[in-house]
Amino acid sequence: MRIYKSLFYSPLLTLGLFVSFFTSFSPVALALTALYQLPSSLATEAAIEAVESCKKDGYNVTATIVNSEGNTQVIIRGDGATPHTLPNSFNKAFTVITLAPITKVDSTEEIAKKMTPAPLPVGSLPLAPEPLKGISFSTGGVAIKVGDQIVGAIGVSGSPGGGLDQTCAIRGIEKIKPRLVP
Image (cartoon, rainbow, N blue to C red; front, side):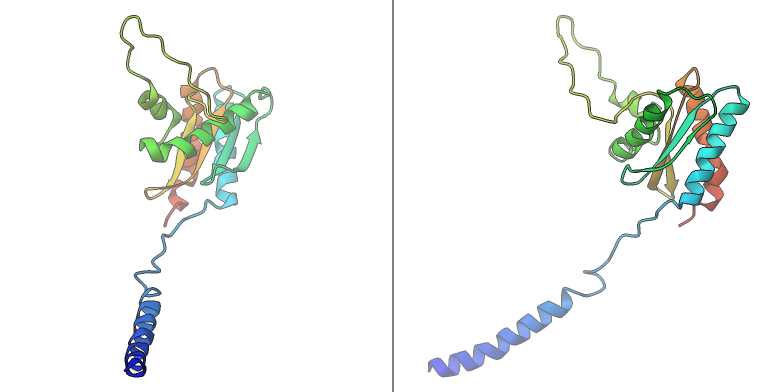
């Protein structure tokens, strides 16, 4: 009787493995998300436009573009931009890549507003948060998007105020925006 059972179950087991193997590789099971990458030529063009637009306004800035993984893609340091503008522009762009998907906003200005804690009750002392390396809540970082997907971020630093940095960053994005298509 044991021989008959094993002969009966063996084909069923083989059929079951066959069906599960091939259905696990069906188009539905293998559906991939399309991720877009910002071409280096567009990243360079946006950074140059940001630096040049600030220069026309009388500000010597640095523009840094990071890709969707937070890696530096382009740095353009304008003539006369001071040393702090290199790390600061990176930090602004890196903050957008890191926190914009979580906070559902597109700039360091909006991130800072969302992350600002409510006033503490009288007598409460806040504990200082341990800073994350590369995070800056200074205005001047803006997401670069294809549709709703963040493909990079630009950070500008060096003008007398973050709002001016952000204006130049937006001008850089506007220069390439018509070519940011899915």
